[in-house]
Image (cartoon, rainbow over all chains, first blue to last red; front, top):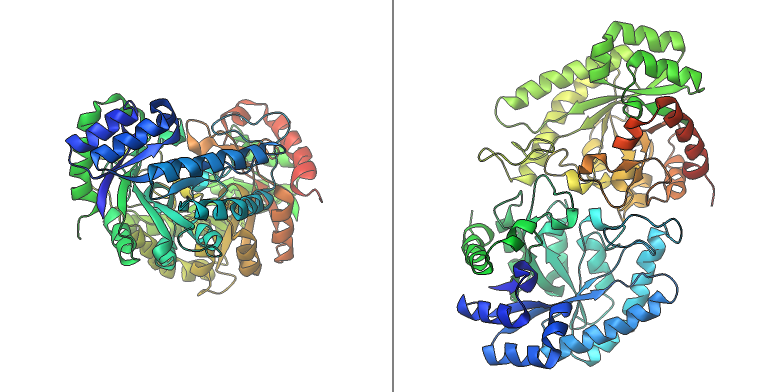
Length: 283
Length: 283
């Protein structure tokens, strides 16, 4: 396993800057985001990562499959485009944040009407969308990586709340089509996390790390911290992921106002140091 | 099942005022908190609930069993006192919030030193404390009610994060000694919640309801809302709890700045209306 910079950790950097930053700091892989790829241009982004000799450890992100009404069809179209982009970039996987309850917008107050509270229904909607998207991804050599999100995001970002759920959802498909993301922030609390990592086995398509801050900031989306700044004990999770057979890159993905305000080169230097000290350390 | 006011919902009310409020609004039960009982005086509180003919649906709360060093022994002593108080009050159960990682204080920033990140160890510490406290509770006719808290509180309030964990923890003890709390706020997201409610069966010692607000407020402890104001679909959970054999009271427990600022009598009136409309409604 080797370290990869998810470009959201250095939010100010464009794709070009993130690629240059990875090369400057001796990293072999980068995780990209669709918004930044679109700004840079897809063809230009492909050229930049190829010329730099970097692996694209993931493209973030597809998903949001639970929109009500016409939104469901538009979401499928958008996910097909995301799959195409991931194929172009040669990304190891397309990270899927599946979406919350129909009608609930991420981080926003509930609207007066049009919210569904049918959680089981929304979960079924995700499974149905996957039936359409998995073969499409398979034809293009792209692996969909289902990301269970921390249960505090269940209503507005992902009705996929546990690794067990994600593993169950991917098992009907070929291994190269659908896998799961293990993100320490989202799963560290789960009493079943070690059993589920073992059960996931080679279905683990991405291992992402960052810490869980205490207390959470006012915007809970930004509760992700630099490894060592929070409450997670990383080495047992890292060992379990390795023992499950994962040999891919380890992405550091931090959404955090202080990290975003800091000099990106210093952030990457700290990330490399903490990765060695905190994430891979043996007990 | 009948409706009970957990006195934290009307935070301004003393035990005397909460008891009067319950009588005034035709409620048969009240959930009390140790701090308020201490202010009123234990003997006086006992007298007030008896004279009013109210059931004490729960006493909140015991727990915080994961303190490091000498704190562990002090926690056991404090829990023995809580059990004694619950016995005096004739409470249906003593709610147990088991505590977070050793050295992490609820809602506070991490201290520079002295924090344990050994989550499995903390969970083991809870199981060990229960070995001491369950027989003590049994001798006094008190039922300990283990409350799994939402995973966002895992680090600072309760390493017990799922109903499955709570059920596993109580099964070695007699049914009258240790049970579980089903609190909609904490468990609504859990893909296994219906199976685990069924498995809990007569181990369900308390059913608490409130809604999960979207987005969460800056202090995530106050993300509990009046039923109908958030994202939870209550009737399926209420039916599952009833089908599991629970015939006790349904406590409404809301930590919420707006609810606390409102006139307590209006809060109780709204609570009664919403309970009928939102919690017990058939589909």
